[in-house]
Length: 123
Image 1: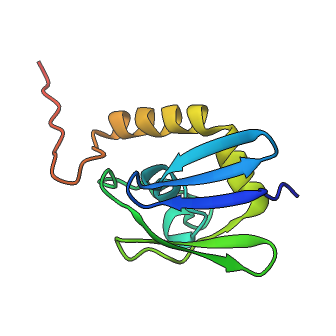
Image 2: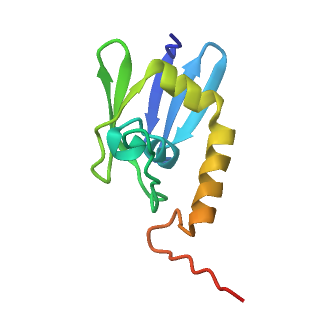
């Protein structure tokens, strides 16, 4: 199990900082929200794409026993328990997971900004 030595919520920058020894990772609230392990996001074997989460923020972080964190988001989402191993996976694979998410958004014609609509023109 990969347990961070420190966890810091930075509300102003909307990030969660995880410290593992000398390595530090900063995960945005948007990244965490779209990768929530909850059934609402992961579905039941078929993930549900999260869109329009650009401005989401973390409103709170609570321990869930000795094995996870419960992250509370300002859009009301708070049902996913982020296990220590899942948080470590998100932290260490952040770049590729984010690139995959952006590619999936583009392919679906969806946007990160809730106030933006993507229109594909067929020429």
